[in-house]
Length: 64
Image (cartoon, rainbow, N blue to C red; front, side):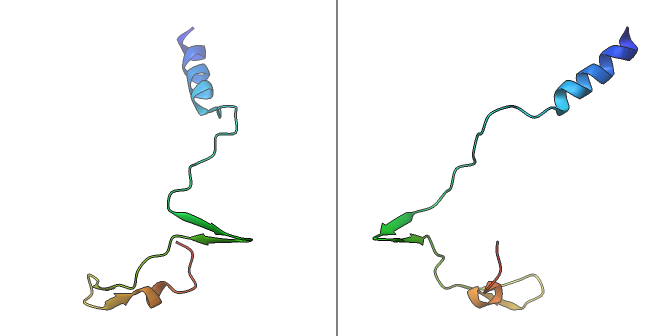
C-alpha cells in the first residue's frame, strides 16, 4: 500500500492547477492616444564588485 501511496502523492503534487491566472504587471503605465508608455528607470551610475562603473547604458538593448 505504501509503495502506491508515495508515487500517487508525487504525481498529484506535480500537476498544474487549472485556470488562466496571469502574473500582475507592476509599474506605472501611461496611455496616450494610441501609444502605451511604460515605467522607465532614471539614469544611474554604480560601482560593481569588480570596481567597474555600471550605468544604464551598460544594459542598453537587453531585456531584464
